[in-house]
Length: 418
Image (cartoon, rainbow, N blue to C red; front, side, top):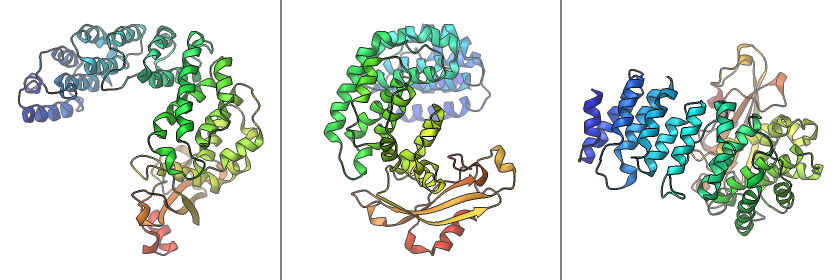
């Protein structure tokens, strides 16, 4: 069956390839294929295929299927095959090969990763850079760093490599001076991104924070600020320290946490300003506790209602939901139950104890697809009373985007909890 699907994957007919691709994905996820089958898929990916553009390359389907098969087995056995196949693959195929390699948390896997990465030209037209998670451990970390930092010359690789470096540093898998040779280039990237950010920031409104072109550099700046808190770099810390003029509370939050993490004083007024932003007070609560600075939490971060508001705004910011912060949000009800109404099964849900749910109405007044909907209802929670103030919850936070005008407050509450 597998060989027949592989043959159709290489068909000249787009319709036949698409159907075979769907069948292959289903088969690969079924748990019935072996590592030998994964080897077959990897070898097949080096075949000669005809396609209109690289995104339609059948080898991508084959390699994705091989990864699905290897995910719950011993992916290290596939490293020699992936290593050999990579030379015959296109740029996206090589990136797919890297995705398989990152499953192998071994020295050989990390070495193969660097070899394949070196084969991919800088600034490829499509794709992203798969990276190892920190769970790969110290052996992988020792091979990757600092060698992989040489690839940060490619601006499109700065974010994924910086993210990987941050995660490995936070797990103390690489030393704080691991990027010493590259501090200058990291500072250079940060300063250039800050120029763009300052050009597009606004002192009023909220929508601009999640819109292009500002949003395109926001994530990278926040990541580098965060990284600065974990590296021994005076030049990087100086650049971060000099960025207090930013209007974005998210970036000011990353800045403050980074400075505190390196033992640099941050005024109470700055933390209080950050905590005026619902979403940022929610994250500030966890970040300050993580670095052992819980004693610096502003009052707003110790108010469960305000943390719930921040949690709700954070949920709304997901691209699949509202995609941005609401311009206005108001609490209209609080409900306490003796058992959880949420889907998350954590230990404290096994007990019967007071759990609080907060109900808000929100709206967007700036130009946005939801503007015409007016006030809309949502729920945040639930939070175990005994653990408050807390950001831990039972997974009940969500919104059906139902209109405030359609029901009474009591009916809205009942609709969410029953």
